[in-house]
Structure formats: structure tokens, C-alpha cells
Length: 75
Image 1 (cartoon, helix red, strand yellow):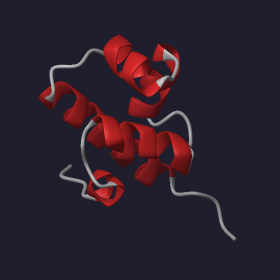
Image 2 (cartoon, rainbow, N blue to C red):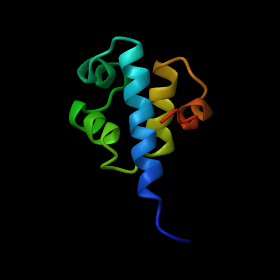
Image 3 (cartoon, rainbow, N blue to C red):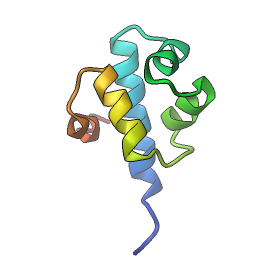
Image 4 (cartoon, rainbow, N blue to C red):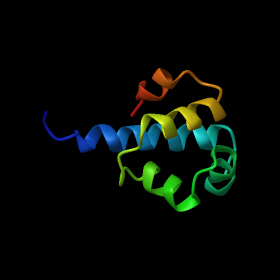
């Protein structure tokens, strides 16, 4: 099994940022709604961490999206 493509992690983070901004949520508010740390949300959006499926699901549910929609990169 190879290394995770950091470009994919970055694109996923950017997609989460786009969806968060579309909903006019601050990182702090998204953290509150998902029960995640605000600093962790920032790390996800900057592509600095490989998010777990469980946490990705929390974010997708907060956005009222199917988890697969977060992988529809527009950038």
C-alpha cells in the first residue's frame, strides 16, 4: 500500500472549506457542530492532516451532504 496522495488530502480540505463558507459557518461553529477541535478543522482545510472516515462523516452530516459529495472536487 502506497502513501496517501497529499494532493487528494489538500483538495478534500479545500472542498470542506468551500462547503463551510457556502453555509456561512466559521471554523469555530463547524467545530462546535461536529464536536471537533477548531484547530483540527483548520488543519483539515489546509490539508495538513489525514481525516478519518468517522470525522469526515460528521462534517458531511453537518453540511447535509452524502459523504461522497465531499470528494467531488471543483478545484
